[in-house]
Image 1 (cartoon, rainbow, N blue to C red):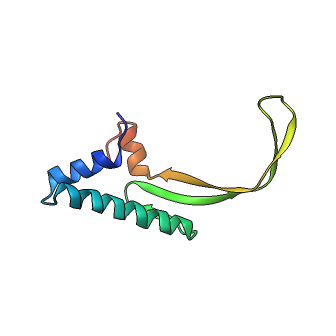
Image 2 (tube, rainbow, N blue to C red):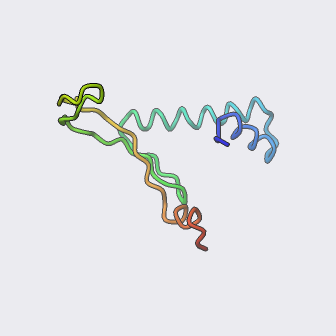
Image 3 (cartoon, rainbow, N blue to C red):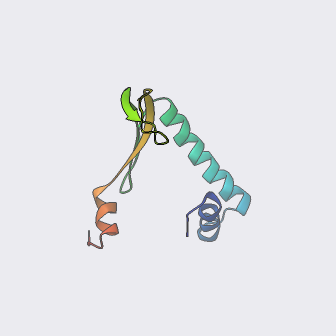
Length: 96
């Protein structure tokens, strides 16, 4: 199963005294803050979870997958995520 905003909001609703609408607004607000922070070039660090960062990728030579011809790929920004050591250990079944 994929974790969606609706699933997150439902879990918040069940674990708190927020209404379903308040829970969804909370989730939307959180993601909006994260988007604005990343758009401004800052990192988003969530303790015991990980770090979201925007990285610059320079111009490079690639190949057109349809015909195999070399082509220039324009510079761009990409979003990266590096999980915390704690999360990595939990994923791998190690005790922390």
